[in-house]
Length: 423
Image (cartoon, rainbow, N blue to C red; front, top):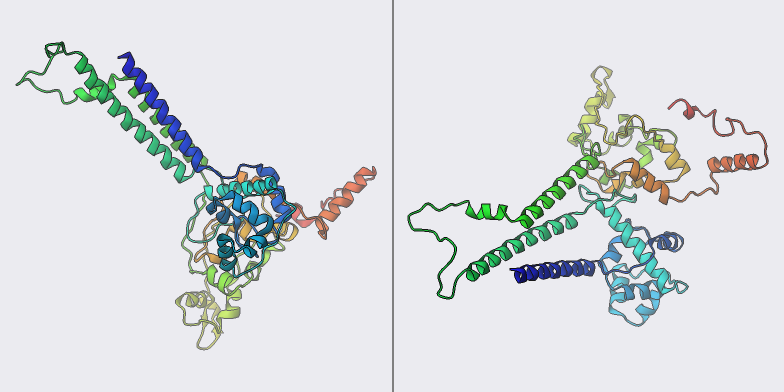
């Protein structure tokens, strides 16, 4: 029996080695330094590309993830014009796909530099895709919460089920071989055989499996891992309302207004540029257009009813007015302070950085997790542009005074601004 146990161990090791090599094969992408790649990407690529959004050029995350030929990517980034001139099929396909727009060449980048950029883009794209994204739309700009993907979870479940089946089959084979060894030379079985007429124990197989210490240990380990994973995911996502999409009193299509019509977000949410709150627009803002545009729509008539407006006479009846009860979507905890103007005006961020592809949403939902980790990730990766910014120029003046040993008051640090106390 020792030989059978040895065969079983060797077979188990072979299965594990094959699984490891297969996993490594799936990860066969360019291996470089993502930190160096991020610095190069910001210096060379951000004027035309983003990892997860279309600018002048395509979003690089999905492009570099789909393309697995890293040697070709290095040549393309260094000198794509040479590949196009040489009639390279891939290069011509990309050139025609993007309407024959020329891409800048980077001959000064070494193969290692390009590999670092590719590694950064793929790792950043993988991080952005880790969190679930409800609804249709392109990925947003901000870093998403990292977590186990569906592919990894299903792969682990598949490996566990396959290992369980293999153990059952091998146990069956070992049991058969044991019975063969128990036979003597004349073919007489030394163990007790079932006698006709006696009741058969239908749970004999399960009892035998329960006595198998290796199988019991394996089942306990799998159960512990599954329960622990479920507990961790449940606790990690507590009070995280990513994907929250309440039913609003009016079905306001952002994809039509902000997308097709290209109306600036701050035309309606005017407080985002100058206030802590972005503000919900008054219905009178809607009436700037909808006194004459799409007056027959049932959704527009909800605005008329709330304002007491008669489209026939074009007059308002103040006795019929009633508030529009919008449902808040993005709701930070009371202990978290967030100032829209500080991010929009001072930092120069776009609304999509936090709210996702709002211009593509039929109905708005919470795109980002809005957790502390998510905010910290954004703060770590966002460059501060101090040139021409009065806020940072004031800080620079304060720092110069401190270096010279001069007096610095709270007023110089913005201590008399209204928002320091009244927010």
